[in-house]
Amino acid sequence: MVAAVSHPPVDPPPMLLGYSGTELRRNLVDAVLRGVKTATSSLRAEYEPYTDDALPEVGERRVVLGLDDNPVCVVEILEVRILRVSEVDLALAHDEGEGFRTVLEWRRAHERFWAGREIEGDTLIVAERFRLVERCSSPQGA
Image (cartoon, rainbow, N blue to C red; front, top):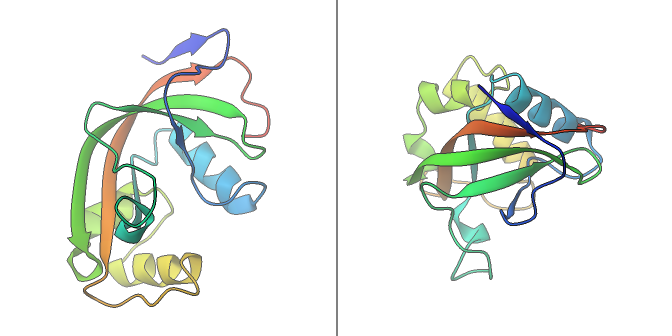
């Protein structure tokens, strides 16, 4: 069961799915709220020591931000794996909740999203699995 909270949580760090204000963000957040999206992936280069952002950790909670960066829900990280793009399997592609039928579809979509970065088979990604634990009371702009 997912609990509703009367005010947005402030302690957990944000989970940014897609870019703010885009249809992709709206679709990804909607998929989380419907329970279809239970995984996400990002480039390893987006975390320490390459940036100031720490790698996600199992058990950590994150606030999913909606279309206009408003808190929509809270998820709990269940699994974090660092793997090569060539190691992505159909289960991860499916669990990202975007309707990928093949790993190749997953890869093409992510190459478009990560445009401007060279993506090879040995490019490292961070694959996260999570579960929805709370909904914020007013998810407008999700």
